[in-house]
Length: 135
Image (cartoon, rainbow, N blue to C red; front, side, top):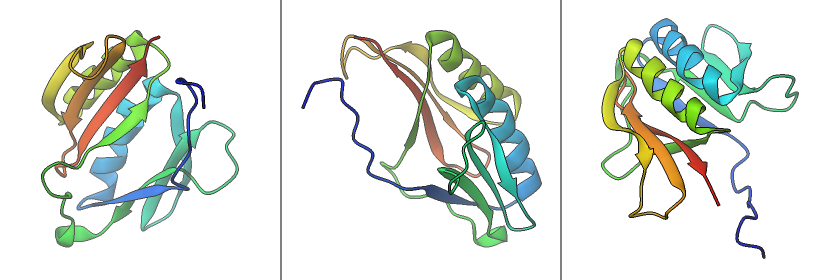
């Protein structure tokens, strides 16, 4: 398999959030630079993916109220970014909507020379990353 080939392992991922409205505002803002929009919503969840995507949204937030707990240490969810600018905007938007900085945009040589990423925690404590693999 070529080094740059991608393997799709998951159909979709959902994370629990305490306040759906607050979380949707956060994700609307920080996912937009990555090219992801709201695809569906109801009283219990909001689904995100590329505009025009017609299958199950690949990412969703689900209202679980005070039982919402971020996964434990070591877990993080990495979103594909189309450009360095998108990584930068993801980070800035996340911080402007209550996210916590976990690593500003930049090259992560410890991963690979072309690994450009930023890291944040959402208002519910989920560790998120936007990443561009430059080859």
